[in-house]
Image 1 (cartoon, rainbow, N blue to C red):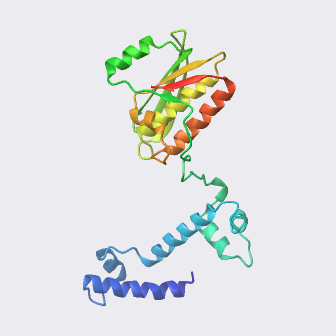
Image 2 (image 1 turned 60 degrees about the horizontal axis):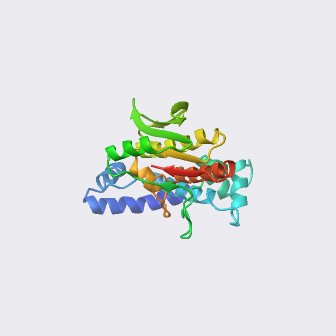
Image 3 (image 1 turned 90 degrees about the vertical axis):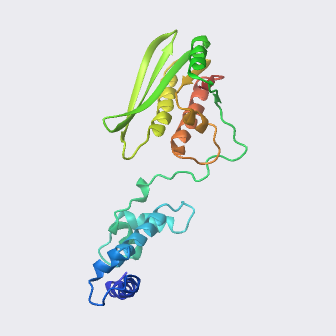
Length: 248
């Protein structure tokens, strides 16, 4: 947007800010905008431009603007640059690096390919662990330590610990333990996939929220993690024909 147009629109916002605050006309614009809790107009314009650029970058391949946006983002031309060039390069947006998360998880006819079971209390859970006898058992957990979120999984076969897998998600500012619990279950499937001759597997986690999330049809917090889990389960069932997987 041309600066002259931005300045004219900014003057309108300044007039509104003066009316809201009742300040004198000689009051500086940035002061009345702070008092009126308004975003400076040039930043407001950038905000909406960036939102528009991100929306354009996430268009599906079937959309007529998908290819022009992709071409504009790939190279900034020196002459005759279009608005698409300006938007993509002003905010440094690369459509190929944007990950799309499905808005609709599964249709209503979908059924999970894993069984779940939750013990009523801790003593009951310990008893079931001791009585169950699958080919492999995997114990997973997640926690925060030193302001980091991590997950781990341990695979037991013939009642002996065989393999361990760990993963650090990142800072607690950007991740939750709930995400780590989901990642821990995924680590468990990775360990199972390395085994041979398995007909039954049991994955244990102490998160009831993670167990219930494996059965959800509607999108939920962190559902992209459980999308990956279901993909891993399908891969396991192709490798180990007839395998019976339970999460407890």
